[in-house]
Amino acid sequence: MSELHKFLFDGLPVRGMVVRLTDAWTQILQRRAANSDTGAYPCPVRDLLGEMTAAAILMQSNIKFNGALVLQIFGDGPVKLAVVEVQPDLSVRATATVAGAVADDASLSALVNVSNQGRCAITLDPQDRFAGQQPYQGVVPLFGDQREPLEKFSEVLEHYMLQSEQLDTTLVLAANGEVAAGLLIQRLPSGGVNNLSAGRSANEDEIGRNEDYKRIALLASTLKKEELLTLDVDTILHRLFWEEKLLRFEPQTGATAPRFACRCSRERVSHMIRSLGVEEVESILSEREDVEVGCDFCGQQYRFDAVDAAQIFKPDAGAVPGSSLIH
Image (cartoon, rainbow, N blue to C red; front, side, top):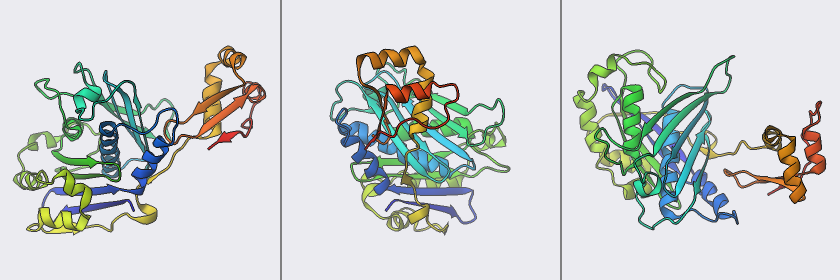
């Protein structure tokens, strides 16, 4: 089962988390593979999306935020867009849009950053927005300070976190067809509340200077992807930090663990169809029997025939039209 572990280094300004996604991750892959239009992800795309999924859960768990965290990567390679959405209860969904051939050994640049124009965006979307409130979004390029392409997604997020939180962060991410996992080590803020949307603070003066963090980060960086994917969390933490005193929190497993869940519904799709306008929908229906919309995240298909569409555009439309849901 999927699990999330949080811990502190006793007496040191350093915290950590380990996430291992098993059932949550394989459900995402199985739904994609069952889609006859797309088929399964190529292995490099699968692994990138898995790393993104593990990272998004670590980031959502690392902040105090009542809303969705959306992690996106987009560019000019065959992966046009990859998206992961994590809710406050750690329910997660993920998808990627692939157009074109993907080499078996494709790197991050080959997947999404061919011309060094790729971007990574993190959006925090509050559940209860007040009037005029917009989601917070931060965007970083997929290159380093010298405009060199980054080939590890973990490096992209480390750069992002350093810019947005002004906190040193080390990430180790890995994924395959069965497991998506991640280890996060982060220097704690020197004072006050700090999260992805916080302003600049005195933490800027401590970046890269804390010797305790640097020692622990060096240990964390020795963790190999194969170890992260195959070893249990207790073994990983013992191998890395056996000389450190860890204060571990109750692990999130079972009902509180990360899990796959999709928020699509017939009502949401109805709103989307209404946004297309009457003329566009009537044009579609003139060529085929119904408007068919598929969810990229979970694979469910929704169909609206002419009667359903007419009900959508009725001025007093309240009920969700039709009931033709295809599994």
